Length: 126
Image (cartoon, rainbow, N blue to C red; front, side, top):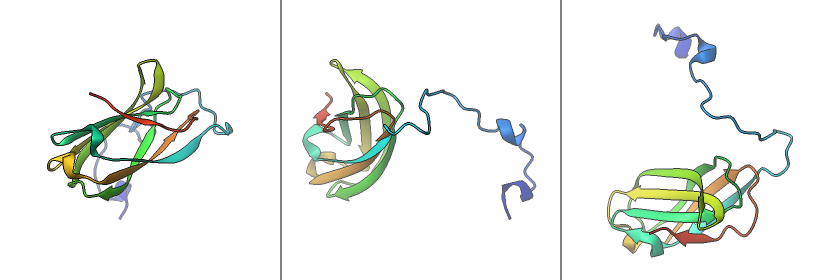
């Protein structure tokens, strides 16, 4: 049974059920959209949180997925947002764990962001 066969009466027509909240100038034919795997350790850990800035040279909205977790507690939630930090453009990534993050040995995320370029340096945000 699919969503529309479930008998649930959604209050809006299907085409407006999920309105787009932001518009990007990114074209699907643009070859500058790429992905990257970013690895870091617990240097930015503060209690149950890990807050890092990844330089991507882009302010387009990112897509971030969790890749590997070596020694950190379970991830409670995470947030990613394109920001400018100390003159650099990139992604602020905030991870919240179920326990103290300081014992983690390695963590990796996959990122995708239109227009990103560079070596994707990672710095703690305090």
